[in-house]
Image (cartoon, rainbow, N blue to C red; front, side, top):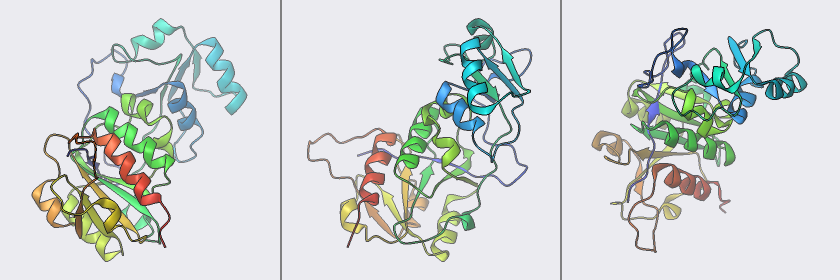
Length: 265
């Protein structure tokens, strides 16, 4: 099978992720921006972010922003071409782009191990589109949070934020140095870890019991790394009766979240 996410973790004050391979503009790195209406609207409405550093919008989008958030000092009216000049080539910005302070990393202790709670750990899932889609699914299914490895995660801006469609603002993300140690700590905090791998003998629905669970997903190429898998309490697979052996990692995360969110007696 295949289909799992990756991850990130950083202490306060530490710069998030490493920059993507984007072309640098004279004024600022293009990967510092969030673009796309849903992503920008959600970021502006998130009290956990600071004041916007710069906000470019077409006249129509500027009117929408003022209607929803009042007059913002950072708001500048701009045409589509000027907005595009600040962003990576081909970015579909929908008439708006935002530079804003980054979100602080959550701590593992912030995640309450209550019945029915679900966490995701992404083991070296590095594609921004996949991580963004996973955050969107995590928000939709009410996941308690996502844990990522600091050195192997995309920046939480740009294409990732757009793919998350606001999920980035709703789902707490913890950035950690070592996923194996993070799993040990989560176990001590009352969580049970289930690693997803196509080689597992048991199906996912058979190992879920309604308790607080960490779903651990690996990269599409490598799957779960050995040491990470060894720190899981159970290994499970997503059954695929159609005979197709692989799912995209973000699709696998959505299926796993749906299964984990189902009520259990």
